[in-house]
Length: 174
Image (cartoon, rainbow, N blue to C red; front, side, top):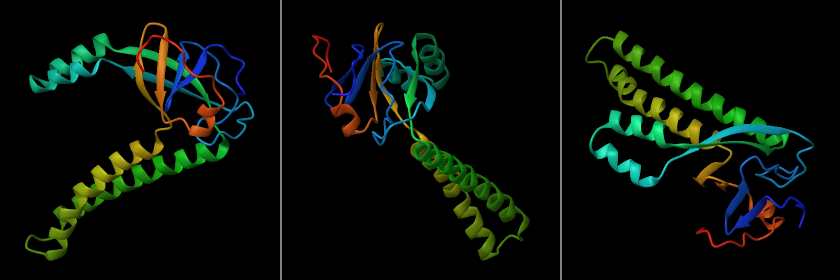
C-alpha cells in the first residue's frame, strides 16, 4: 500500500474519501507518479430518485436538483499525458460540433432538392450530438458515485491505483 492517509480507501471499484482529504501523488487514471500535478474538479450529486421529477417537468427537476445537490471539490493527481489526452478529446468534441453547425448552415445555403444539401442536413445533427456526447464522455476523468455528509465515492479510478489503497471497512453501503 502506498497511502498512509487514513482518509482515502477503496471499496470494490470505487475510491472512497473524506471530504477535503489529500489523495496520493499518483495519477488516478494510470497510477504513474503525478509529480505534484493536480487537477481540481468539482463533483455534484443528488439522490437518483430525483430523476423521477423529469417525468413531471424538466424545469421542476432542474430547480430541485440544484437545490438539494451535494458538492465536493477535490484535487486529483494526473500525469501530463492524461491531461493532454483530455485536451484532445475536448478539441475533437468542439471540432465535431462546429463542423456540424457549418454543415447545417451549408445545407441551408444549397438550393433545395440537391442531394448534397440533403446529405449535409442529415449529417449535421449527428456531428453536433456526437461531438457533444463524445467530447464530454472522453474528457471526463472521474465521476461521482455519491456524496454524503462526510464521504465522497468516486468512479473512474484505475484498478492499479485502487489496489494501493486500504480496503473500506465500514457499515456504510457500497
